[in-house]
Length: 481
Image 1 (cartoon, rainbow, N blue to C red):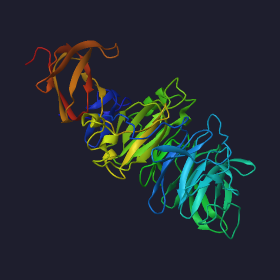
Image 2: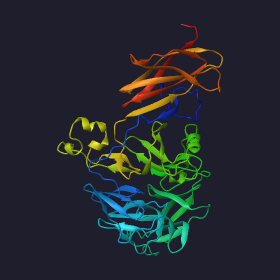
Image 3: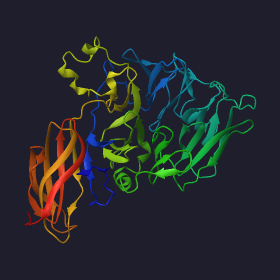
Image 4: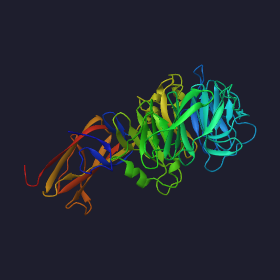
């Protein structure tokens, strides 16, 4: 049997095991599976307005805070309520404002480029008086880094760091090591940034800078990373995958481990992504890493859309792709409190009502991480639900010089679906277009089909959870036995 190689519309359409189309099908280590449905955690209300940034942060005692921001407010989820933890004055974000959220010791810091950096250790947020305005915040070593800043003057290529071990002090000083600089070797503003080990990585749209702590008076020394015009298109179009960054650039999707950026979509989904994403709003792409399943979700605005409504999904170990479109406002790795027997009634009054959550879901574990989203109704939802429906379309099989007869098609399931159906397509000469062929449902574990043509392909529709590792089709020369 042929192993499934994942969604690869850019590959040779006759390559064995590829999928040229799929819906709600994502990769796992040994094949493809139906994508989970989003479900709302118990006692979690919707946010008051559109979420423009969210994060789960951990304090030094391991207690966690779930922070979400809107254009004018910052909120914390506590005891099933989104509590307003904003400063007294409303924030002044614009249409493209998004919050950047990081944790430094026991302090949570937020930046939106329109207002001075905000700080909270548990109570309401307040201005950090000496801090700049910043587009991007992250923590590295003894410092908080701020990129794309305004310290009274616009510095879209500028960076600042706070004093060593003191996130409340940003006034430049040799004694404290608070300082700032600009990255001007390449054109453009700083678009994204993230820690990588003990390095500070700053991204422009077409370049990457690696910052290393060197002490006073320079404090941070930034060098441009070789790699052509690799860069990141937006502040949320990047995620940490553990020892490396996954990010979306102007011309490819990349992984950077501190040496050179490596393209990961070439020959698989690169052309598909750039053909089907809106170039005017591609900077709104959101990447999030599901650590439990080794999956990177890339949410992006499709053609005609102005916010993320589609998603491609990459398995960093199996190096396979899938598709699971969702319309979202923000994404994060939600950490649940877990569920006890006594607490089941708060989720559902009946056992049947618990079926929306798969039994291997992190939802059930105390401290379990689950990739989560805010949907377009501002509702936090975890991607832990049972798959409802999915589909996939194969590549093309056949021969330009011979008519072949397609017979039964069989899958090797790790998890069989509740039901499945097949629609085949035929083409007599390459390039003239496929027309509908035979249809069929599952009989004795296979799809009993029969059709003759030079070229064949098929679409399969599944209901319920499904995991597929291999497929096989009976294909013989027409008239043969």
